[in-house]
Length: 454
Image 1: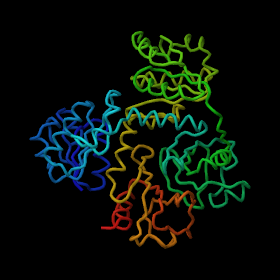
Image 2: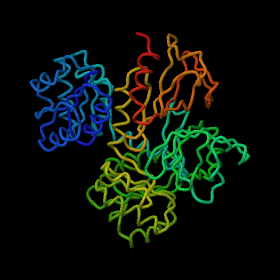
Image 3: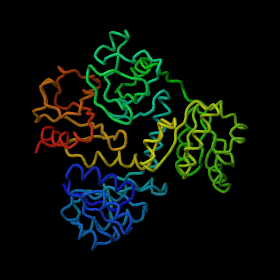
């Protein structure tokens, strides 16, 4: 599979890293010498220092033989022109583009059916707002993802010392706690990700992932002593594009919303566009302002300024002042491991949201959705089982799944099945697979060869 990536920034770098690790043929184009040097020194991919919208550069990259072209620069206009030129040079190459400006929102479908014929338009700002809303819907969770068109959720919860599940082998959880336990898909412990077995025990501080339907979610959260209290009062720090998108979405919900924005002109702009939100001109890290606004009464504070250091400091401050929950937006992946250590669990990233959106399109087989976990450490894939596959009509314990992978859910019609070793996959089932990065190439091979008919 040959893939051309236009843009060597954070998103391009990490997608290239994913693909190179899986031995795919990757070419990256960027005119920034430092970005190209960073790529060539760290990843085994071909690099071209040039404009990604240049026909000559795209031809040199082999666009005519590429299955996929990803336009992920920081410029919407460059991404659109790169897709347009690619469409002229190689109409059969599938194109994905990152486009962030709200002005383009209503044209996403038009871009698919008319030139530049972009198969998937990815707006990381829309995706990150969806992630925030998902987190707000499950306040007891650190991480939330959705599969099967939202019917099934991936939930990550942090375990505390006092919880009843601590120290019990997974195979004995339901019997010992005397409550139905979810299937534990993964554990992140001391910054390492583990696909657990039945004799593994849960420890305080673990970040535990499980799958759940909405109807079982309250019970599963209570199993881990988490309670899903509704979010009624929200403070948004930062009235930029993402903060505005979130506030606009919350206007349709019974949520009292305040926005703190330090740019007075921006305050006027969003005040004219929003009907219910209270707009405050000020600094989200101003302790006196936060105190005056009764920060201790807030169910959720979401830090969404364009400066991630400000977001981190504001989140730490409001937690100290009594805010119940925080969500912090950061962009640099190097900051991710630090967040847990300083007490910030709920993190969102537009760049990570863009990567999650792209992943499903670079996976072979009938992959319907994909989501990365803990940066690049693991992925959760949702795929369709095809009738021609020899993976169907066999118990899971007979199928040789790669080490470090686990089938965590089977969706059959309107039924969600938590699988056991004796569970059998049927044609047309959606299956959800959790896999560490080392197992991804083998999983992809299974999805491409066993799940897909050629």
